[in-house]
Image (cartoon, rainbow, N blue to C red; front, side, top):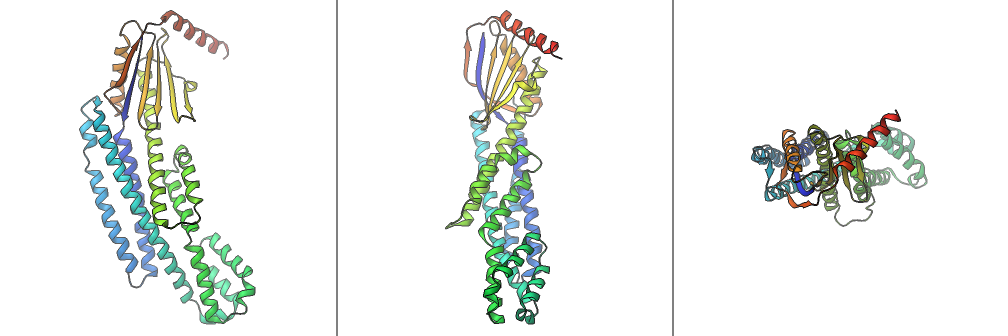
Length: 364
């Protein structure tokens, strides 16, 4: 007999840890930006606005630390599906809030960069504007990034025929506009935004790969009426995708470990990903012929199928498996779409398993 059921895996620890990491990284970035503002903004206008954002973000950090979802589910093996959906709504709200904060921060960054270009030019010796070569060399020394230095060098080379006929005040205005358009352009800000995402997930190549398409779509935006909204949408989508992939990877590891601990053999070639369905498949089998198969979706739900049992003997394995998941701090919802099917021939599965092992041993 076989038993098939569908459940939802709930991994609050991993999910909230992922959101916490996102908030911590943003707080660090904001503090660095405040330090940047102190160097270029004498009025303190930008600093005050960014500090307000930091205070609000810190409150979100405190709210996340005080959430009770992990404690609420720690005592039960199963979690009600309603609780799962409540947790997802809470996580979704947090993602949206963080994405909105990020969009505001990078919009401020755009203004800060414009202010920085103005300050750099104002600090230069006025006599330099009479000599294009000296102006170019002096500007290059003001920038640390090699890409910036290369841009300035190239700009003076390509625009020399324009600059050479301008007066010093006209040169100032022209160069300032060029630098503002370059450093504070949507393209440059978008590059930094995508870079910040990759940096956040750089420890896990799979997470970086999971957001690659969203990053390409965002980088491909040329004309936009509301760049801040585009930033927010990118962060909201990419963080959700990366979080889901991180949680699923963790779930797959725990499923494999749990099924092994209740007596099933799972080899590396028994774990594979169906790219077209965005699903991870896991196959385990016992020497006595029984099998257990799992399909883990991106949304946290999974289907398991136990085959090769007589009567309801698979219920014992299924309960032992769910108990092991709980020991790994991974909970599941009450099963739904549960089905029992007709008996299968255990002897046939047992012989297939033996043949597999014999062939594997003979090839070594």
